[in-house]
Amino acid sequence: MDKIKVIINNNQKNVKIPTGLRMLVRRCCNAVLRNEGFEGSIEISVTFVNNEQIKDLNYKYRKKNIPTDVLSFSLGETGNYSTDPASGYKLLGDIIISIEKAIEQAQKYGNSLQKEVSHLTVHGMLHLLGYNHENGGIERVKMREKEESIMSQMGFIGGISYYYNK
Image 1 (cartoon, rainbow, N blue to C red):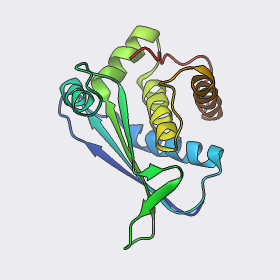
Image 2 (spheres, rainbow, N blue to C red):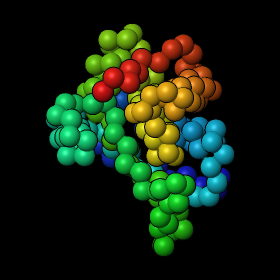
Image 3 (cartoon, rainbow, N blue to C red):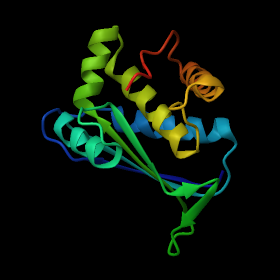
Image 4 (spheres, rainbow, N blue to C red):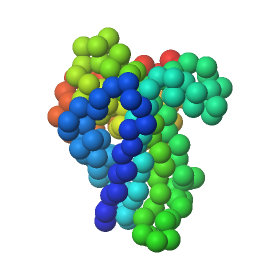
């Protein structure tokens, strides 16, 4: 892997993003790419939004009229990614995280906000790389195992709180 450019945006005003959270998101993106043996220079966008914003996106793209915690929009198909002609970076896609939902879930499951946002970032990154849990079965198990392994490598020991019943 050459270089990783993680563009982080905060498009909400409801919650102050804690110091260090942006660095943690970058570490998560790096950990997933390293774990997957991804090669080349990469660009990823991660955006923090509020529940209303993610609800709108969830409805627009998935026809689900509820706020969710994370959405991923891959710019690649079957391993082929667009390349930014100016930089030569492969454009993986966008991860959208509801910081309000992350706080709710962290409180509900007794996790730190850092652990919750890390998990949502790892989950979103795996979607960008083609993993999918929506159909259940072995795909769901593989994705869950990857998430657990990467979270453990990052120092977050113990189960993760994510439920696939959305």
